[in-house]
Length: 113
Image (cartoon, rainbow, N blue to C red):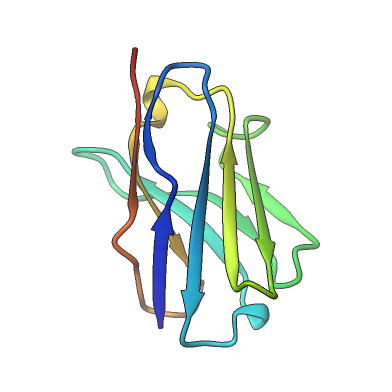
């Protein structure tokens, strides 16, 4: 099982980023997928989850209305569109398949002026 996250970077408050996570080594279309994030000195927290066929999504209260999770089961990729970014969104972002014990290296998102 492997996850490769990409798309992070430095962005000003109010800006947008789109994260991608390419998954391999398992039947991607059979699993829900989640995005987590971990800020310095804080525990890893769940940001968003999407069901296996993309019919349902859930978000943490802190990102609801600003972030959108989506997936492409042909490309085995899950995305996180992040809009109206705030400094408190600064963290390393990871994708994860609930039920599989594996994490990628993450992608750093820094929101700063």
